[in-house]
Length: 101
Image (cartoon, rainbow, N blue to C red; front, side):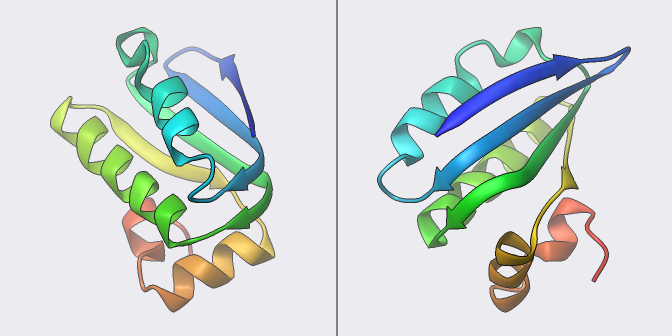
C-alpha cells in the first residue's frame, strides 16, 4: 500500500495505490493521521488505484470520515474504481462519501 499526497489551494488529495485490507489498515491509519493537521480543509481520497478493499478497509474509511468531520474538515472520495464502488454499494455506505449512486 502506498499513499501519496497532492496539495492544491484548499484541498489535499490522498492517492491510494494497492490494497486497503485488514493486513494494511494499521499502516494506512498511521499514514493517514500522522500529520492530519497539515492537510487542507478538504481532503479528497483518490481510490482509483486500490486493488482490493475489505470490510476492515471500509471501517477505516468510515472512521476517517467521522474523525475529519469532528475536526471540521471535509473528507470525500474524488476518484474510485469498480471494485471499490461495488464494496461501498453492497455495504450501503457509498452516500456517506459523496459518491453518485
